[in-house]
Image 1: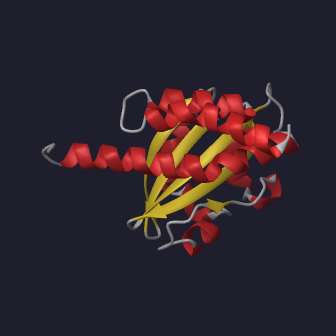
Image 2: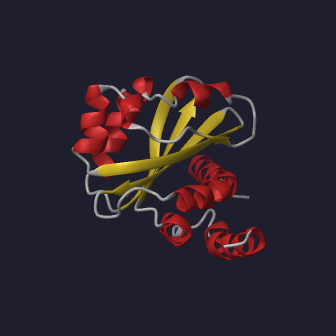
Length: 184
């Protein structure tokens, strides 16, 4: 697909998710957009404040143990995430960070067993963005039945990753703003 045609299609694919920011349908709409763009099977979002993991904010897709993985990652596995240094290096910049290509050898044995072997994950792409002292770490996964991302799918996913990370940040900032106070 030519660059202009890809850009136009990506805009059409991501627009529904942008319009769903702050609405209950956001997770489902975001995952639908990611599936159209690169056949993403599962999406998880984690938030960081400084060097602490604070929470798993989103767990949507085809990994049945996603909730358990979110709890384990937020509890302590975030400390051994090989992307952690790259994520923390972006602190203070409201610029999306495109994280290195997935390779199983990047992860410790216990991390690899729980997050890839036991959960059937075969591939991952990720991005992160820091906004107002919080980091939103967005992970895109594929399971065995889907196979690994192709180079073209990775290219398409990384092309929209900045917009996706910004949309995720805005959505969850919106959630935090409405959870903690009186609406205007």
